[in-house]
Image (cartoon, rainbow, N blue to C red; front, side, top):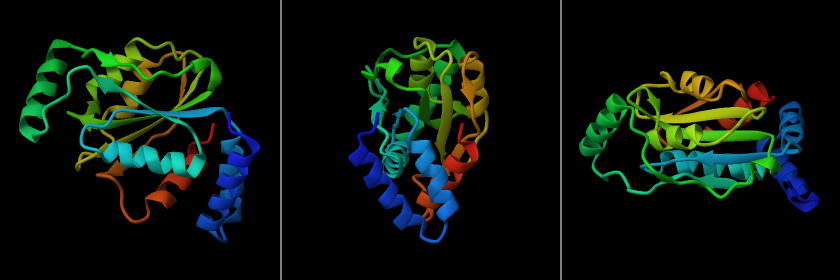
Length: 190
């Protein structure tokens, strides 16, 4: 939950950022009053960058999903490992974020898109976390494939949650990333 000071700081920052787009600033300010947290997994840092920008714009706390055994740094070994995990239905053990879900109604969940789907560590967290009654606002980062099946994965893995439209970001975002995020928050606002 945001303190009054954090809320006012976020609203002032948003108003400055969106300038003449006052209706957008008002809608995002309303969003800030909801009990919102950001949960994400990032392999290369792209998803972390987007999660950080969302947090800067909303003042929502950020929680990271970390695999117990890190994936290789090199692209090809990682994609080969992920393909094998997906074929076997394997969900890697993770260090789950220390988040008290009772304190949040809205979860912004970020994932890289791997082989058209959410990353395996995110799938692990979703499979062991009861998100019933929560609003899920997914976002994904990708290297050229776009949204693919990531939103569908959230819908399938969170059947007792409301899943909004997704924010899809190429890499770690363009120069207009903040504007993309603000538009998404407005359009997907639960």
